[in-house]
Image (cartoon, rainbow, N blue to C red; front, side):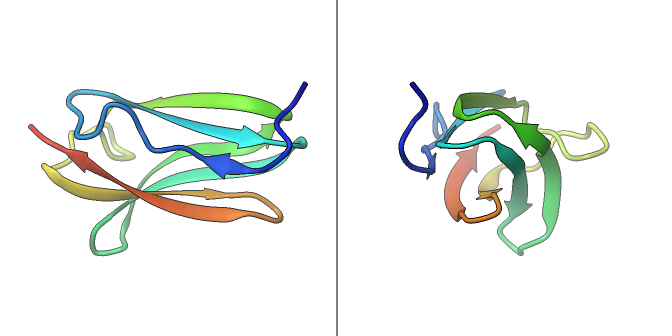
Amino acid sequence: MPPTTFSLDQNYPNPFNPTTTISFSLPKAGKVTLEVYNILGERVRILVNEEKPAGIHQIVWNGTDKNGVPVSSGIYLYKLTTESFTEVKRMTYLK
């Protein structure tokens, strides 16, 4: 049975190095975008940009940018966007 509400969970572990897992729940199928931003609001990486079925999903981020270059230690924001839901959470990357 699919979840009844949209949700974006806190990444685990947090702080992390070298990887972290981001979980989110979708009560219905649809287009999903999951993006990582630095503290300046610059997009670092797009982790998901596709149709996803209803259910619970987990994405692992390895702390690299869109070019595969490791990011600096610091605070990052991750943003889940669907047609009717948007949420942002913070995570900390430690080298």
